[in-house]
Length: 164
Image (cartoon, rainbow, N blue to C red; front, side, top):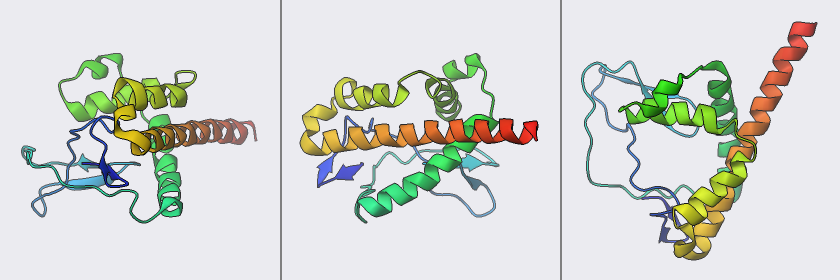
């Protein structure tokens, strides 16, 4: 449960979100690929714990949040520019595969950060969560914009280095 200002962002943050958090030593590894830790090299089957936990992502202040998301945006941009996803993956039954494919395509949409704001605030009913829902929707759109800027920067850097 994503918490901001003691408000549970049930709508704006698209609850529930399933994340790989507990593992048996030697049976799986995490892959740091931006905003979320992802499973990598899983031996066996993944299971889910149904009980949610409280996530206070903003508890260390906005400077900490922006610094952390600046790092995440760099990792996400690198991941999104180095991975090619097939359209068929957007319809995968595997949530992780589907989410990654959607990120690849949505990032390329003109105005995606603004669309991300409207998704969190209007479509997912973040407006019902008051000030916290608005602040979250604004910041998640800023994060998506940071990713787009870094993707543009990475592509430009690659073109410049090829020309040299």
